[in-house]
Structure formats: structure tokens, C-alpha cells
Image 1: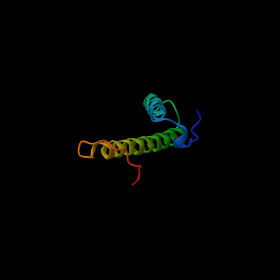
Image 2 (image 1 turned 135 degrees about the vertical axis):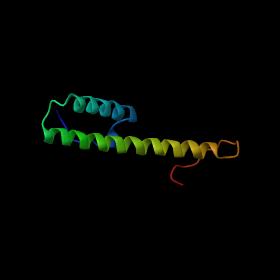
Image 3 (image 1 turned 120 degrees about the vertical axis):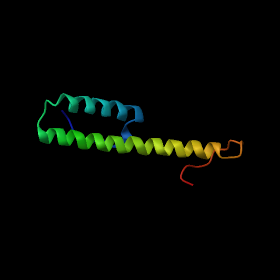
Image 4 (image 1 turned 135 degrees about the horizontal axis):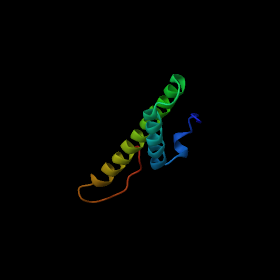
Length: 79
């Protein structure tokens, strides 16, 4: 199995979550060595952190759009 980390920006949130599900399934099978399991676990943690960051950013953008007193106005992200 290829456990090289890909740049998170090159994947969509959905792709990250799909890959995370595959990693969990592989770890549950418990048919690999300790080092391979640890490497896979580390990759899963990185994917989880990346997905959480993307979700947090999306929530912030939604809050920005809805906190305009009923008037929806787009505001540049990160302001």
C-alpha cells in the first residue's frame, strides 16, 4: 500500500473522507505489520486534521454570510 502523503490541497474534502474510511477499514482488518499500521494511522490522522480544517473554514464562511443582520453580503474570507 502506498502511504505517501499527498498535498491536502490536491484532494477534495470528499476524497479525503473516502480515503480516511479506507484507512480505517484496513486498520480494522489488522493484517499488516506494526510499522505499516503506524504509518497508515499517521496518514489517517493527517487526513482527519485536514478535513477538520476544511470544515471549520466552511463554517466560518457560512457564519460570515449569515451574520449580516438578515442581509446576506459576501465578505472576503480571512478578514
